[in-house]
Image (cartoon, rainbow, N blue to C red; front, side, top):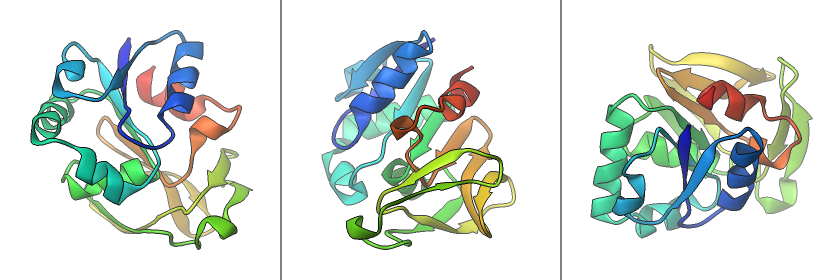
Length: 169
């Protein structure tokens, strides 16, 4: 599978490494031309406001088309915020819900998924078509809506590749 990783800002290199270890061909996506021929896309963590500012209209349109095609999408942390703001994900999120960088933490979800929470957002509303895959206490931390999987944590910073493998097969 040929999987792109949005490489405008944030933790994209770590996603590339996980996908390569799973045997996927990876493409660092910086422009609309990089989206051609992709089978899926990762929207990495980072700074959601910076990512939105760096997203050109051409690249946004190419990503809109890829997502609308039903291609698998993994949106992590700031990527989940971006997916929500673009209308690809029927959910709302609160930025930095668990605190600032100083409050970064590691935890384990109810399904055993290791969580790295860095300025992590919190889902505050989930649409009716959204399925919760994992929780931390009462908070959903991993969700699925069709082919889009969104995480409020950084699975690329753990040794557990289940989130990537589950999204991209």
